[in-house]
Amino acid sequence: MKFLILIFFITTGLLLLNNCDSTDPKLEPDLKLELLDVSCTEAWLQLTTNNIQLPATVNLLKNNSVTQTFSLSTQDSLLYIDSLLPNQTYKIQVAIQQSNNTSNELSVTTMDTTSHNFTWQTFEFGQHSSSILYDVAIIDENDIWAVGEIYMNDSLGNPDPIAFNAVHWNGQSWELKRIPILLSGSPFYPIIKSIFAFNENDIWFEAGIHWDGLIFKQIQFNLQWSGNVNKLLGSSSNDLYAVGNNGNIAHYNGSSWTKIMSGTTFNLTSISGNNDEVYFSGVNSFTNEGILFKYKSSSISVLANGKIIGADEVFKPFLYGEFQSICLTGNTLFLGGNFLYQFKFNRWDYVKSLPGNFVNGNPSGSIRGFIYSINANYGNDIIISGDRNTLLHFNGNDWIQLGEPYNTGSNISHRSTKILNHIIVTVGYKGNKALIMKLVR
Image (cartoon, rainbow, N blue to C red):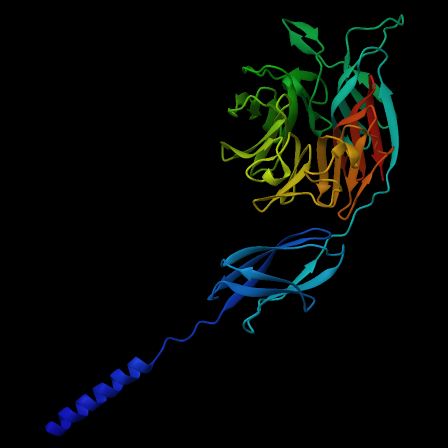
């Protein structure tokens, strides 16, 4: 019996000793790279780690050569690579410097550039007073509309006080138009500042004027709305947004307009977005301030504010100056006014490829004036326009001035510019005449 008890205690002791000496299996470090976006010269990647002792020193390898070394302090990190070449494929990987642990290898192919090779024509309109065009819509190369106010002489050669408020390109020539609004049953021809076209038979003009291919119909606003509609944007005629002065925003659902309360008195001047989210930007020209809203899931919030501030204050928390125009393309929101910014993966930055695009720079001494309009086919095909004959095209690698050279003393202002495939049309004024510039590549 004593022998059995002794055997029991010895066996139990050995088991306990064995358990005390055992350790849990060591978990292997894990690094995972995922490509988020790529341009002609840049790439954005998500690095996700597990079982990594932080902080850690990490090498970024491009084609098996170390190009960056950085300290990793969080499990998930956004990695940015620049100075790539267009239309090239790179092998990208990260490695922990203190060990032999490496991530998966990504094959990243940059976008190719687009062509800067445009030919252009210019057209001027107006015979008296000050004519100007505010907005433009390209349906195709043979169907283009521009809106504003164009003052011509009557049949006797006398100044006609009633302006033409639109002009249409039919593939051969421009035809001046007067688009009516009915007031107490009588036609009235207002200045029109905004247009948005879904197709040739579905075109919207400000104040709820709709062209259905046969007639102009007026869809009443029935809202407390003062001033013009500065911009229109939608995914269909059942989903249309309008913005105007004094913080006005409205949405049309196919049957009626509904006011969206912005909470600002700034003049809202631009809209951009997709089916998931819509952005509205605006300015206070008296104080040189800007505001940018994000509208998602029926909720509106301020995404950015702009003020005239010092260089060291930018992004803390303000951007610089006015926000006249916005353009969402792919994963990037471009914001323009005094300067050109981009918002990508929840981070603001200057568009560094644009020369002189920094707070300490002087726009009047660089390659552009104030930015009134931004439009894009995609990130490698962007057009910006503005004062002093500013008309700049980005092909994914560099910017060039289109048409006549930029001139600090120019009396040309491009107020709205659209790009559709191989066509660019910009509208505004030259002196006291309305101006259209049509560019084709």
